[in-house]
Structures are given as structure tokens and as C-alpha cells.
Length: 228
Image (cartoon, rainbow, N blue to C red; front, side):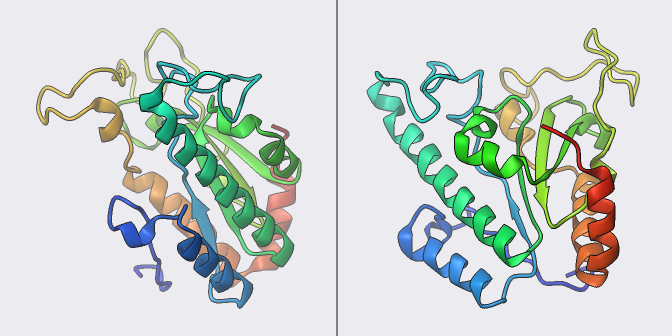
């Protein structure tokens, strides 16, 4: 609301009513978009089962939607990941068709980007690769955002490439996202799940610019679009 537009955050961690894989919930959201009640969409599907570092692995480049044999205790995570993927594709397809600003965020190396459906849409998107340390975090966390009908120039050229574990923005060593934080006791990867304020501000401003001046923003989108 700070920029003048209401925002609805739908996350199953907040309520079961926000389970995007539930047919009633997904149909409702698609209907909102179809009738013009949604000005823009930001999607950040859980990368749990799509992570290339997931152990035991439940996917591979050859079996993107699940290995032939998956441990029983990982089957639910695999199904949730697949269901979320299918919903994301429906949302992106609809937003592209109706020219609604839309973006998807996931780790840069996530297998999510490699599915045939995602690859099809990526060919018509603006792709931004960046590291969260460019926005003030202690961790690098290389990330990718694909955007349709939306330019986010504030994400361009923000990859940390200095190497040897040292951040080119702060000059300090990156925090490695493994194990637990000694202060909070929480898993370090969960601490890194929340977006830093500077990053959120860049994304929010890009959506607002699109809402207010779609012609100029579309021109910028064409210039900033990069191949995957």
C-alpha cells in the first residue's frame, strides 16, 4: 500500500486457504486475472524439490518431473513441486495472453527453469540473473527472475562475480547457507528465504512504473531483455 496499490500475499505458511495447489484456490486466482481484478503477479514457487542440491535427489535434468524411483518420504514434496509448477505455468500463460505484468523467481540453478513448459515461456521473457548480496544480504544466493510485460532494470547487472567467497559489493566473505544460525537456531536457508528490503523495493517500483506508464516500460523491456 505504501506505493498506492494494495497487495495480496498468498502463502500456505500463512493459511491453508492460500494453498495454490488446491483446485478452488487456483481457479479463483485465475478468475481474478481473467476479469481484470489483478494488475500484476509475482510468483516465487518453493524450490525445495527443484533444487539441484536437493538430497536425496528426486529430479534430474533427464527426469525433471521425478526420478523413476523416489524415496517414500520425499514423494509428497515431489508432488507439491509438480503441482506448483503446473499452476505457475497456467498463471504465466494467462498473463502473457492478457498482457498482465508477471514475474517468476527461483534460484539461478533451479531445475524449475528447465522444464519444456518453462523453456517455452522463457523465450518470450526478460530474464534477470542477480545475487542477493547486491541488495545488502550477507549471502550470495544467485537467483533468476523471468518477467513478462514487465521491465525490472534494477535487477540488471547485479551478479556477484568476484569469486573466492568474497562479495564484490561489501568486500566481505559471503555467509554460506548451510547448517543453523548460532543466534536464532534456525536453518540458514530459511533465514535467506525472506526478500531484503532493497530488493523488494526495486521490484515493487518496477510494477508501479508498469501500471502508470505501460508504453514506456514496454520499450524498456525490449531493450533490457536478455537470452536465457
